[in-house]
Image (tube, rainbow, N blue to C red; front, side, top):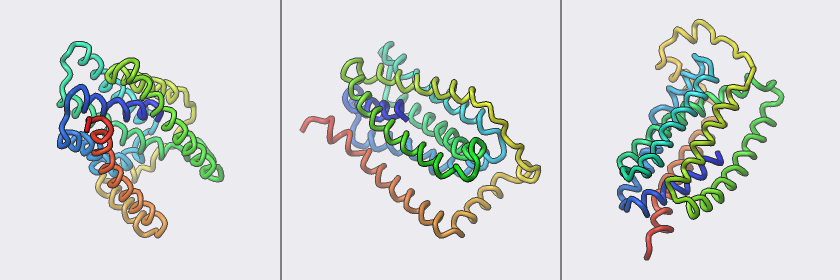
Length: 230
């Protein structure tokens, strides 16, 4: 989370200041980061139910690590383009969806059911602190190293995440044979019916969707507002 917050500062700076991105291009960049959540979140959740979650988490981290490192490398070779930035944003967001779906589903394997609320609360608190610290660190790194080199900090954070995940020594339970044999579409449909039958889950889903949409609009304009001279 801290590394991603560094990127949240460095990527807009890279796009607007160094690559001279227009308003439409920044909007397209933000849109691409939202598309994987729309298209892949449900399939990723179904996959996390069917397969071991730790390899999915490690794989997602490594994909993000490799794609992010391509940006400072291209910048060092003076070959960085806005199109590459868009591809990296799309791939990174897609890998992040898979990682997060597996991570959320992995927590009940690590904790007793009675401790899940406390575990989620602690994770949420750590995310808030890390996001704030990462944004501040991102501003410092961009000013000292430049936007492209600052992204190395985010790439390093994915390496740390993958290494830490390999050190988890909890054996996952094998999914039931019926779940492994069911069609992916069936699993997704069952999950959606379960969520929308429950009033609390339905309300949370709709609230989070609305908030994500609003944040997408905000993220489109804030970089231009802050970085483009009046």
